[in-house]
Length: 210
Image 1 (cartoon, rainbow, N blue to C red):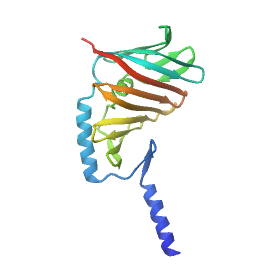
Image 2 (cartoon, rainbow, N blue to C red):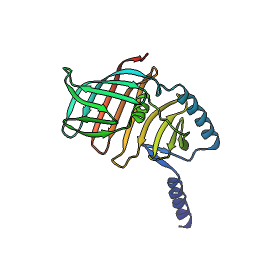
Image 3 (cartoon, rainbow, N blue to C red):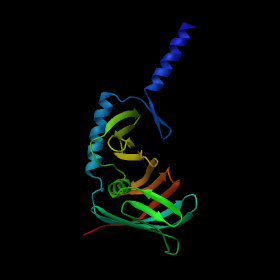
Image 4 (cartoon, rainbow, N blue to C red):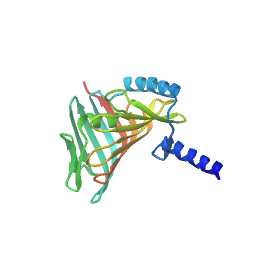
């Protein structure tokens, strides 16, 4: 009986020391794993396109409580000024992004400041160096703390973020990345938990602004 209680207590303590994100369980990172992750992240951040001025065009699918449609999303990145237009299948404007918000007639406003939108579209995050909060095989859990807590699942071998989770007062926002990066992620899925808006993007074209 004592042996069983000791084993059960060990399991509970181990579980308490782990974090679960995106269906993955992350154990506390070893010193070597944390050091390798930090170096890989520095290289990934250095080659990120987050600060580039560019024009991006996406095939877009958007759904919410009152809207479900396919179309295109055109984004203009110009320093602190970021603008976007979400259009339907025949080019009819559905929503616009300006002044840090995505607004549309059948969409509840989605707030995402320009710097954060740049980071999400680039498949990265900006700011101070993150803490390595856990590891699971080739993946580590990165965490940024500040006005908002941000967590990212980072594949150390590929040097790419798999997902980002931003905790905000109005609701959590999660972005998942897949496909090639040239250097922008080919596919992005965004869930805005507060409004229930789901946005799926596939990059169609990109051009660096002069």
